[in-house]
Length: 70
Image 1 (cartoon, one colour):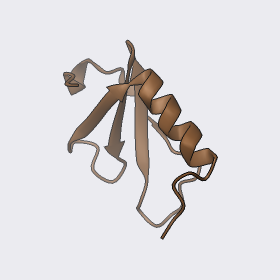
Image 2 (cartoon, rainbow, N blue to C red; image 1 turned 60 degrees about the horizontal axis):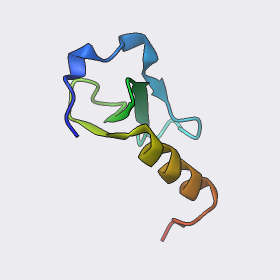
Image 3 (cartoon, one colour; image 1 turned 180 degrees about the horizontal axis):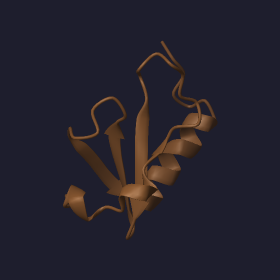
Image 4 (tube, one colour; image 1 turned 135 degrees about the horizontal axis):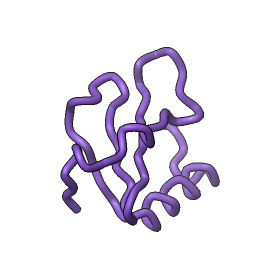
């Protein structure tokens, strides 16, 4: 899914709640049925977009520990 990154509301970018100070953080912006995800250390860099239902499913599966760390 593609989105014009500059049409995303700037105020809606929020950092992941489990972010630490190690620089490995993501930010998400949900707007108009999509979830845009970017590297918090590179806000002008690439943005990955998925549908909001897909994003909610991924977050739910991570919280349920379906993707354990190696």
